Structures are given as C-alpha cells and as structure tokens.
Amino acid sequence: MNIKNKIKITVNGKQMQIIPKFSLKSLITKLKMPLNKIAIELNKKIIDKKRISNIKLKKGDKIEIVHFIGGG
Amino acid sequence: MIDKKFKIANKIFKSRLIVGTGKYKSFSECAKAIKTSGADIVTVAVRRVNISNKNKARLMDYIDPKKITYLPNTAGCFTAEDAIRTLRLAREIGGWKLVKLEVLGDKRNLFPEMIETLRSTELLTKEGFKVMVYCNDDPLMAKRLENAGAVAIMPLAAPIGSGLGIQNKVNIKIIRKQTKLPLIIDAGIGQASDASIAMELGCDGVLINTAIAKANNPIQMAEAMKLAVISGRKSFLSGRINPKLFGSASTTNKGII
View 1 (cartoon, each protein chain N blue to C red):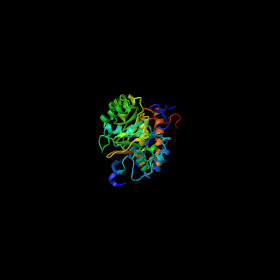
View 2: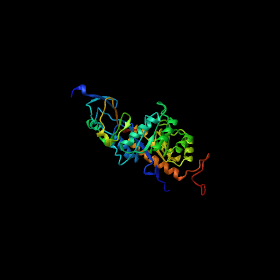
View 3: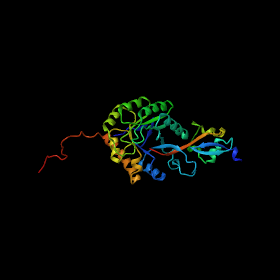
View 4: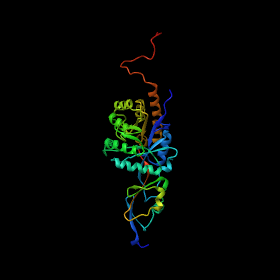
C-alpha cells in the first residue's frame, strides 16, 4: 500500500496511519486489546463494542481506548 | 449484639472496609493487600490503555471483578462533564452502575468541588447510576446530596492521602444523626486507630487507600485496618460508658485490710 493512500487517525493521543475503510474492530485487533476489559470512544461518543466491525474509520477520527487501573 | 447488614444500593457487603487499588508497588502486592483486608469492594480508576506496550499487566488480570466489586471512581475529574464521561466509559467496560463520584476543585488540597459534585450526582442519578459521593464533611451539603439521590455519603476525614485522621468529629457525628444512608469515611485515614474512630462515630464503613498502599508493610497494615474496622464497629454497637472528669475505682473498697 502506498503511504499516500493512508489516512491519519489519533488513538489515545497518538497519531496512527491506517488504510482507508479500516474498521474499528480491525484497529482493536491490531492493538491486541481484550474487548471485555476496555471501553472505546470515537470522537467523544461511546461505541457499543458489539458494533465495532460495522464502523469504518475516517481521516481525523479521534479514538480513546480506556481500561481500569489502580485508584482510590 | 447482631449487627445490621452493610447495605449499599440494596446490595449487601460483608466487609465494612473498602480499599483503594492505587499507589501499590505492584498489582500482586495490591491483590494480596486486598485479600488480607477482607474488603469486598475496591475502587478503581479509568485511564487510557497504553497502546505502545500491549503486554503490560492489567489490574483486571490480578483482581477478578467477578469475585470482588469494582467501584469505578472519577479521580482527576474537575467538572461534572468529565465525571459523567468517565463513568459512562466505566459502565461500558462491564456494566458497572455503582460508582464513586469524586469531583475535585483544587489540585493541591484535593478538596471536593461541591457545586459540581452536587450537579454530577443529580445528572448521574438520572442516568441510572448508583452514586456514592466523596464530599466535604459539611452536613448541609450531605443533606443536599442525599436529596439529589446519592446512595452513600462519603465525607473526607482529612485531605486525600494526607493520613491526618479525622479532623472534624463533630461534623461527622452530625451527618450521622441526620442520614440513614450509608456513611463512609473516605480519605485522610492514616493509621488503624483512625479507622476505629470512624466506626466508633457511627459510620457504616471506611474507604482506605494510601494508608495501606504506602505503609512500610502494606499487607500487615491491610490486616490492621480490617481489625480496626471490626473493632471500632463492635465498640460503637456495645455502647460506650459516659466519660467522667474524675476517677472511678474498678476495685471495691469493701473488705479492704
């Protein structure tokens, strides 16, 4: 794939390049994130984890992937 | 005397000690301390996953949310919007509705921003969350939180992580008198005796993180806190003697030689 065809997205504040029509599910799989231990926001909207294969990522999308850490 | 059950939002919990999961040296130390403390609720925070280190250990790998109740918090939130966003995400991870609301107003003293806290309590309650609220030790605000739908009132003993112990026993006693909601001291405990005092004031529970996690021996301190909470509760239920200014001999003078 030519780099020119790639689109830029932001995941947890870091820029990433993906191929067009890359799904949110593919991104989660690529990042090896266990679905049952995370929550996902796409452009500040919470995404139903059951629907992630239907969501195609677009240029400039901002994704937040969160999990639980230690806290008081 | 048989104690009444420790119930929050209609769910019964065995331990009156709630433990935080922050500041430990490792997840395994944290898990061990929780086990020793006997707590069946632990607070947890919501943060970004580290996407560059995919193999990094996760809290959920060490503390099983099926065996222990996770209480997601809103640590680091300064507005109602931040808090709601955080707790919606927490709910999405695994359906958590029982949450700890903590909206701060000052980065140094970490005191709760009570106007935003009250607004958040109203909004979250409307959304179906069961909100346990970290708050100031102000009886009037505690009443307002109760009216807004809070399921537990959690006043500070002293600033978060300060270890100063209960600074205003009078206010805690007044809040105790006015509310039937679970009253849980959250923040400021330093040592086991502080936890006992909280229970002797009539609180239903105590939430402790730093005092255990940062003790020289966190596992032993977890046990000390467990015993202190049990001991304080029994002391409260037993009905203390009235304090007197002068002495009252324990041994009779009858038959003295």
